Length: 239
Ligand SMILES: Cc1cc2nc3c(=O)[nH]c(=O)nc-3n(C[C@H](O)[C@H](O)[C@H](O)COP(=O)(O)OP(=O)(O)OC[C@H]3O[C@@H](n4cnc5c(N)ncnc54)[C@H](O)[C@@H]3O)c2cc1C
Image (cartoon, rainbow, N blue to C red; front, side, top):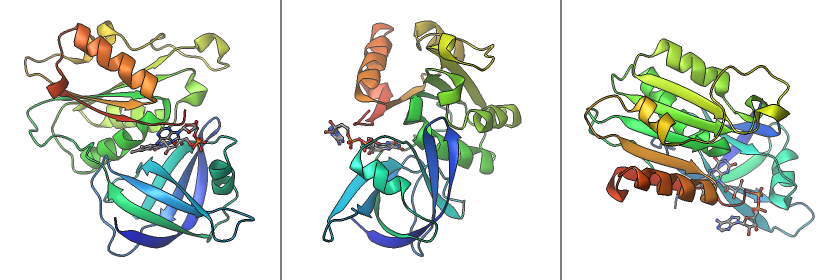
């Protein structure tokens, strides 16, 4: 895998307990929306020991920075990530991954994201909007509360500005939210899926999130007759 040295430019809060990290895009680095990188960090108080985690790129290829987003946790890796200062050096390896948007633009895509599983879809949706692509891209996005839903405002804006992009967010634990929410609640189910599938052409389904969620979604799609050939998925371990 290709390795590149880069630096942290900035960070921002994109949901409660969730940060996006912007890195300088190294010369010669190119990727496709949906791909991931390994972010390799030098662990503190160790003699050169490093740790790596995979992160899907949130940024689209046309953007200047490379951006990843993650739920901050108590793991040594995440603590090291949180302690990075602006300008600190890191290594990235990649890109890798085959969760790429299918090339037949006549076939709609249905993206289903659980929580931070939104990241690869951000890159795909940003790129589609940037290129003014006329293809049907629907997103079903599940979170516990609106507070937890990274990039929700941007997604709603993308849907408003682009005819082909549909976004439906649902909250599974809305009673614990302090924010007003007028949208759907409860888990992603057959009804929500049916609400975005409007044409006769079979969509390709993309599932991303923690392994348990991806498995449950795959079972749900299989119950309504969607075969494995029409499903692509990526599991984010560690949640
Ligand atoms: C292709 C890909 C893209 C990803 N993109 C993102 C992203 O955009 N944002 C994001 O937040 N996370 C992403 N992840 C998950 C990410 O790499 C971390 O695993 C996650 O953030 C948890 O890290 P942690 O330090 O909080 O937990 P950790 O302490 O690393 O892990 C917690 C638990 O999960 C187990 N675990 C960790 N990794 C694996 C593994 N690969 N296989 C099996 N068990 C494992 C550990 O053994 C431990 O029990 C991605 C993973 C993959 C494979």
